[in-house]
Length: 292
Ligand SMILES: Nc1ncnc2c1ncn2[C@@H]1O[C@H](COP(=O)(O)OP(=O)(O)OP(=O)(O)O)[C@@H](O)[C@H]1O
Image (tube, protein in one colour):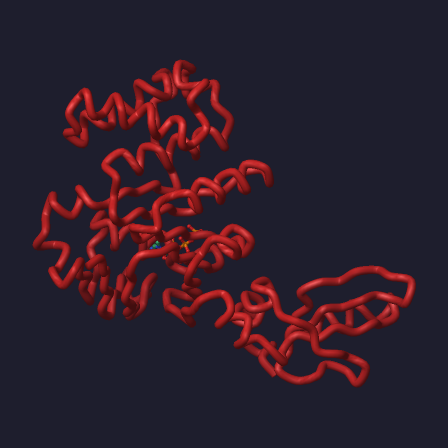
């Protein structure tokens, strides 16, 4: 069994809850934790990793409270924090061997593991280079390698694609997809396309709360009938943008084509469109008052 259960997890700073009563059950698979900046993703992930203590609630690993597992829990956990710290003067390989030693992995096993992981993240030919010469994408890939050193059952990646160019994002996505499905992977991001293709389940977080969860198809189904396309005159676009949540806008020969997320048909000529995950995100993250 591999099961991580969150029961009413809450973290308060003063009277304000950064994470508010989150309950969920996670099993094997990739979970995309999607939310705007400040929605509480990092706080939640740090609580799951045991770095931050929850004000209320508890987390269970296979039925046992993680606090009671002590160092055992750390052995099954891999974590890539948002501000991944590394030693710029170390080579990639030396850095992995150093962290492996900290994790008490025997030297010979560490050597094999480091080589295997450097290959997995596409840094095999750069293993002898100092990290300070690496691009942001390479550093992130090294970050995922270090999180995998102990072959964790639970892998937590906090905004792993922040600041990466599109090619590196795709590369990163492919690495995640290639990881064994035999673990729980939680990946936080505010970028829909980071998780659209690889997550088995999406966790939508807003203002410290879990708004909704489900697989992509389920999410898309929920937005069905709420996405519209219509053509308007260029001079009217601002008016519609002010009134509705516009997920896309394109100039065409027939006028400006607007893609609008709205519970009601926004104008007579609007036709329903197939939702994508960006529409779902916009649907849930519309400002209060935009809900019609
Ligand atoms: N130590 C702290 N003291 C007070 N408030 C905090 C603290 N840490 C986080 N917060 C607040 O809690 C909220 C959630 O922050 P958190 O960093 O978890 O969000 P996030 O979704 O990870 O955002 P980002 O993507 O920008 O990192 C924010 O409003 C933040 O200001």
